[in-house]
Length: 103
Image 1 (tube, rainbow, N blue to C red):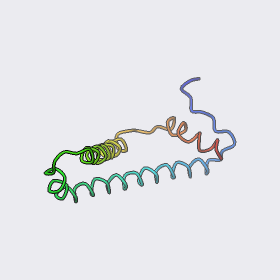
Image 2: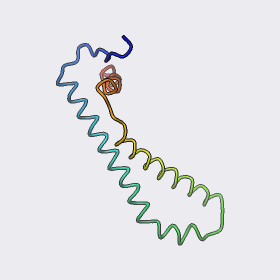
Image 3: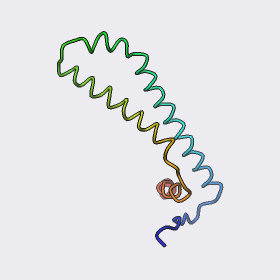
């Protein structure tokens, strides 16, 4: 059956629960790092406007904007994704299979 949860043969319930807890800890760590990136952007925006935006255009300035705003956009979308994706048991099982197969 294509929609069934994949079998995790040889895996105890405690091991599976521990893996779910680790996945949740990873989500919180991602949220924390994304929050730091957004906080850094807010704190340094004044200096950026004063020093970067008012300077003449150069390849370095373009590179700065690409890196700075790509990272900011990825952080915002990543944080949004942490709260909008509803992980079902089926999705969790698929996410954890590589963890158990590598063990």
